[in-house]
Image (cartoon, rainbow, N blue to C red; front, side, top):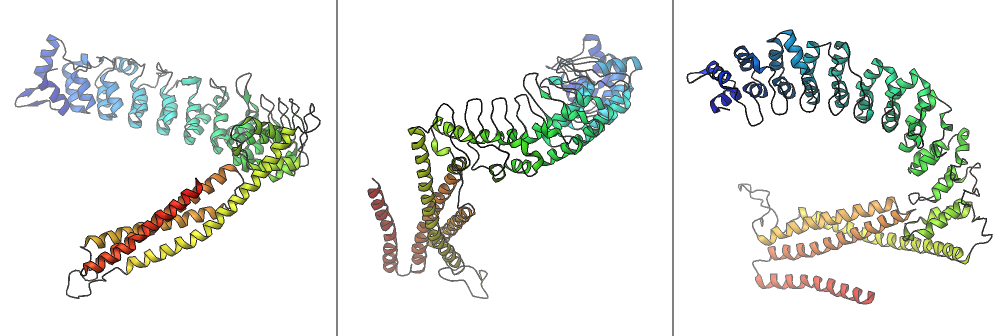
Length: 574
């Protein structure tokens, strides 16, 4: 494209002393229209930069450019809609006749997008509103990605655009989008509650339509905790709660979905409309308690067991014969058996699954299979040992291996308890030292070596006298380091105190790690305190160099003592 013409389109300049738009366009019309490397005409360029006056002048001179497409088959209207230039869009639609306007609005690019697709995807609701009003008879079908403007508006949460499409369009397309999802699916999945409720009110039956995964809009709303949407749908038709989610051979229910998410509020919402839905089983005969345990929803497990009317959940077996206790025994997450499940009279501790195993058998078999036996919670195993017994029918008595494993497990539990007591005892001593270090370094920060300038006529009144000395600066920095490290160690000990009786191996590892971190911070603080002391003394005794060097040398002996102690400890370990 001619540089002069291109720059005029970019700047929106139709004429000046050296340029006249009409002359260039007439010359182009005779010799073929000039385009950019992307195939954009001067009308495309002006639309891109939002120069509505320039666009109007171009169309008056060469109206044939109106429907001209670039290499991506985009018209100037596509570009203006994508950029959100509503004035340009208005000019493009108003300067032509009804027939050309309809044709222009329905033209699609390489992706099958109309101008409305572009406007909605770019979240330009004013442009979308204008386009919808100009062609209310058009259905605005889906593009090559199966996206309709309605679907895009729902997915992006553009409520105003949704209202305009639903109200103004005589035939708004409600065709399924990607993954066979409706606009209602899209609004729910992206948690646009207002848009979801609007779409549901417009077409209530759409909430029954399933996507390729077999999930309808209610299933997603339950999973995401959209209480208002769920309430609307179940208030309209309670039977929706019983529709399965998934494939023909592998499916679940709304109650199971809420249980897997651990959403007690959603559980209560479902029960309000369908009080018997807690009885539902999924395709593998698992109930809600099975699912809650598998998804480690501790709070929900206790909640489900509060009411005696749901006691039967604790005794239900799935298609493998596993009760909730069997699944709990196979889990490495749980630290212990929840009290309500342990004391539940309905939960049979000696029930057998299809492999003839009791919950204790399952716990033992998991212990045998794992290579990292430390990851098995001592307290969980002990709980099962106390509430049940080994009961494999093909083995009437415990094998020697099983007895040895149980003994080893109990022995390790006692050893770990002893280690924990040792860690906490050491932490109490270290906490006293760390507190002293914090106190000393805090006090040193406000009683600096050399004192403060007290001359009332000095511009540095109240400032430290030795500020310019390098040794003093080192003192200040190391004092702050010692204070920060000591404070960090105290915080670590505080966190340890909040969980001083870990119930699982993971908790024990956290306790040990906190102890190591606190010890390292305290060691660093002690080193920093020594450096702060030496440099502070040096700064105040600088006038007597010999004395200053002597004091610093004696102070540095602390490092030699540290190294000697570490040497002795290392030698004893090896």
